[in-house]
Image (cartoon, rainbow, N blue to C red; front, top):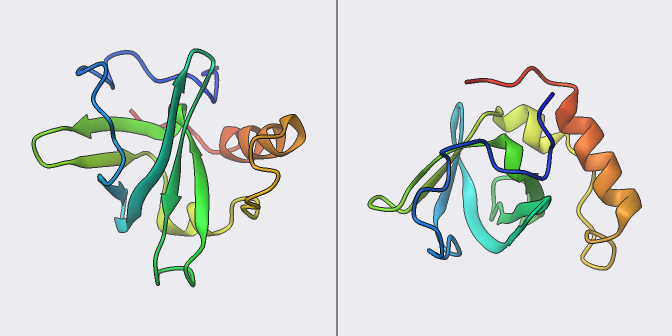
Length: 116
């Protein structure tokens, strides 16, 4: 089983490149852009600003949900559908870094089969 907060091998090839501002693509279309990122070992994630797609909300995407980063096109590709992302645990600006919330998000995305 993949650790939710760890990047898949080979996903991040240009270490040190900031992903902030990159477009984020679900398997079925664009969901927003990267608002924040963490590359801490064992605690890597993106905060994605979904804009008008889900009423201006943000979502936390664990590193394991990322299948590819294209630095030329400035896009991040996820192994999740828009519906799966929309139904994820609610983002809260005050608690999204807390262990309980992170456990909920990790468990939620862990339920879905990992796409290649």
